[in-house]
Image (cartoon, rainbow, N blue to C red; front, side):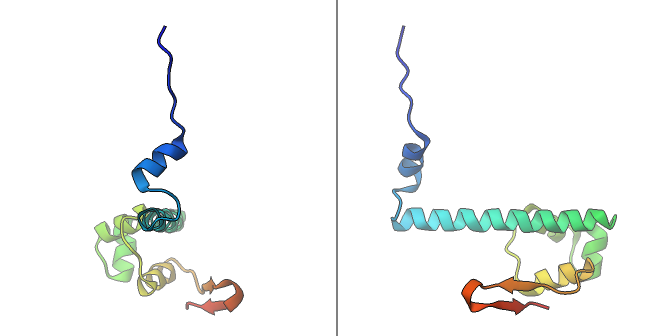
Length: 110
């Protein structure tokens, strides 16, 4: 019987993205983190919209964008600027928001 050779996932990640600490790996990890954050933000928007029984088109009308833009935001397929973030959450009835900057303190976004 042939013997199986298993490769650890960490080795495969190093082979594809480069070793930890390299410029290529750091850039890939940064991009991945941004995409994950965009996904979670999109999920929050989708859940808030659905809780209010709004369609994507209705939310888009409230902030002046097409339904497709709302879809991209909810899927995390677009980078959301602070002004867009503010418009979306205000349209959903979120009265205020703060950004926690750690040791630098908190900043009111709106």
